[in-house]
Amino acid sequence: MTTPPDIIRAAYAELIVTDLAAARWFYVDVLGLVVTAEEPEALYLRAFEEYTHHSLVLRAGPTPALARLAYRVRGPEQLTVAERYFAGIGVETRRVAAGTTRGIGEAVRVHDPLGFPVEFFYETTHTERFTQHYHRQPGNAISRLDHFNVMVPDVRAAYDYYTGLGFGVSETIEDSDSLYATWLFRKPTVHDIAITGGDGPRLHHIAFASHERHQILHTCDVLGALRAEHHIERGPGRHGVSNAFYLYLRDPDGHRIEIYTSDYYTGDPDNPTVRWDVTDNRRRSFWGHEVVPSWYNEASEVLNLDGGPVPISSPPVHEASAATIGADGFGVAGTGENRQGFKLGHQA
Ligand SMILES: O=C1C=CC(S(=O)(=O)O)=CC1(O)O
Ligand SMILES: [Fe+2]
Image (cartoon, rainbow, N blue to C red; front, side, top):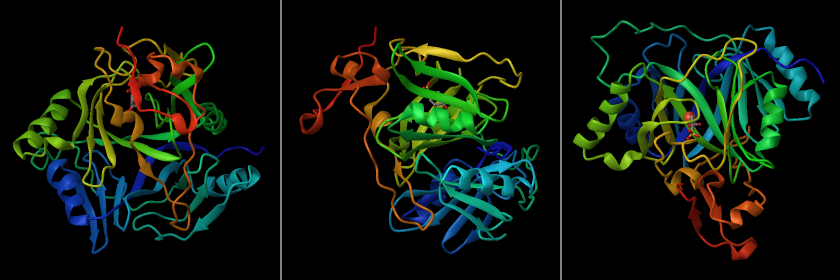
C-alpha cells in the first residue's frame, strides 16, 4: 500500500439544503456564521477564526444530503499522493480543477471505502480572519469548524481505514467484543472525525467550536427567544468522551450541527487513548443524561461523486442488543423483520 496523503484537518463540508433562505436564517442569522460568498443556489460560510474561503457550503437541492466532506492536506504535492493512495485501495478517484468549488483550488475527490464523498485540497482563497472583530461577533460567536461525525454499519472497518490514513485514536467506546464508536484526529485535538455505529454511510453531524461555554448557552437563549427551540435536539451538556461542553441542533432540513468547546490537546506522539466501557453511562453525557433516540437513529444521506444517493446498510444486530444495556444508548429488540422499536439503555 502506498503512503497516505498528509492530512492536516477536517476543513469544510458541503450540505444540500432544500430551502436556501431557511438555511441562511439558521446558519447566518441564528448561528452567526460569516458569509464569504453568496450565489443564487449556494452560500459559502466561515466562522470567525477562519481565513480559508469557507468551512461550510450550503447548496440548494431537492433532497437534504451530504455532498462532500473535505480535508485540507499539507501541500499541493499531496494531491498526487492522495490519487495514488486511493487508486491503490481501489476506490473511485477524480482530480477536479481549481474553482470546481468556489474558493478551493485543484482537488482530489474520492468515494471512500466507507461510502462517503471526500475531497482533499490545499489551495484556497484567503479571506479576512475576524478573530478580533468583536464588533461583528454575536454573543454566540462560533470560532471554527472542528470535526465530522459519520455513521457507519462497521465501526471497526472505519477505525482501520482512518488509522491507515495516519489518524490518531483519542477515544473509543467498547466492550470485550465490540467497538461501538471511536474518535480519530490529525490536528492536535480530540478529533477530526468520529465514527458512530448505525445504518450508514450517513452523516451524523458537522461540529463547530466556540471558545466559551457561555457562547453555546447564548445560542440556546437565542433559539428560545425566537420560538425556535425545536431546533435544539440534545444538550447543552458535558460529554464524557472528549470532555467537551456540547449542544446539538437540527437545521431546517434536519442536518445535525454540534457546537462544542473545551476538549483537550492530543498532539504528543504518546497521547494515550481513552477507552470508555459501553455500560458507563457517563460516556456520552458525563452527567448521566439519557441520549435522545433521535441522536442515535437519525442522520443525513450522503451522495456519490455524481450526486446520486449512496445505498445504506444496517449493522449486524449485536447479541448484547437483545438485552437492555447501555450498548451505546439503546438495544434493538428482536432481529430482522421482527425488529421492534428501540430500548433506551438502563441508566445505572
Ligand atoms: O464530538 C463528540 C464528542 C463526544 C460525543 S459523545 O456523545 O460523548 O459520544 C459525541 C461527538 O462525537 O459528537
Ligand atoms: Fe461531535
